[in-house]
Image 1 (cartoon, rainbow, N blue to C red):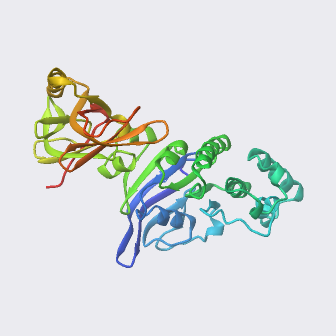
Image 2 (tube, one colour):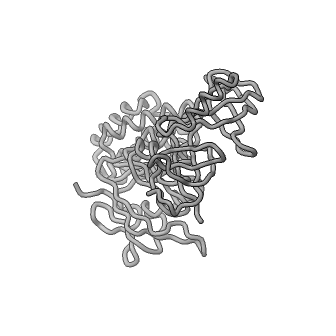
Length: 373
């Protein structure tokens, strides 16, 4: 099946600053793509270029095989069969919900009967029937967002662009709306290009993630694959792997590893591990770690034996608790694994400051990357 969207070697600069450094990918019909990255990574620039709100400095954008942006051709936004939902929804404040949704259909000169049928269908689909005659100012944030989505879907665009669509909602509504949107778009077979900085939102909606950093793409893959093995330290950190350790790179029975003093930390790596590497870093998520409290010399001997076992499916990192904080259904524990190195984990109860023990982290949930040099 031919792609709806193709981005080829796309480049954009602002003065001397590179916003996009020659990126490329394609989007298939009915696919939901989420672009994930920190502020300033280029994701909003990419969205604006696809929408036709800016022109690229190099490369091409194709929609259904037609070039709409290149060095020699530029198709204006209104002729691209693309609709966009903005962060602030951009609803017409003087128009009712019904008139906002029907606006594009009227511009296309659809018949009154067709407009009524289509708008009524969208109002029902998005649970807005009782709000049809209200103005945007009379709606909650979640209701306004549903109106903006209904308006964007009314004209059946080839591609729907979503620019941080949930950023203005509270946490409960964000969770509710990302699930509703995921269901709706798949039910309709809508092709969606979605930009966000929230990994949970991207996971809930996307068929594939495009993970960006400094104007380039770190990784393109299914959400589960990105989560299980991030391609770069930046991707790992963005997907929650906030614990970091540095050491000397090595092999442990053929498995990538790093050595920190007497501790060996093994893990999975997306790169080919070799003996030319000198230093490496290990990253893991707080929710991947559990805690074992040290109780007497016998427990320490057992833990030490486990640490030295190349066949163990776990890494054990000696640490001392420095703080515990309550987060509702769990406690976040901060521990010191080495002088100046703080590591976080979650626990079912608070741990007293000064408690010594080990963070226990599955090897499969520990990600290793070589350091430059």
